[in-house]
Amino acid sequence: MVTGLGAVSCFGSGTGALWEGLLGASRRPDPAPDVCGLPARPHLYAVPDGDAPARGT
Image (cartoon, rainbow, N blue to C red; front, side):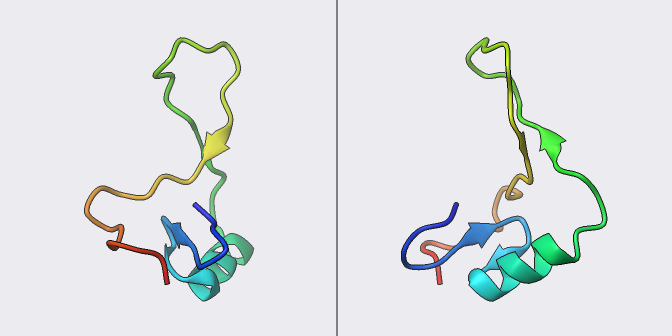
């Protein structure tokens, strides 16, 4: 998630970690899980459970 205050991603917290992760990604994002029965799903890099801080930095 990117906000006006920072970023929380699977690459870590903060905009620096986000950009470093996006530019150096060694694999493609995964298909998003189909939780609503929608036909078209985007791809994403999921934030692992427990890795997200209480707020973005």
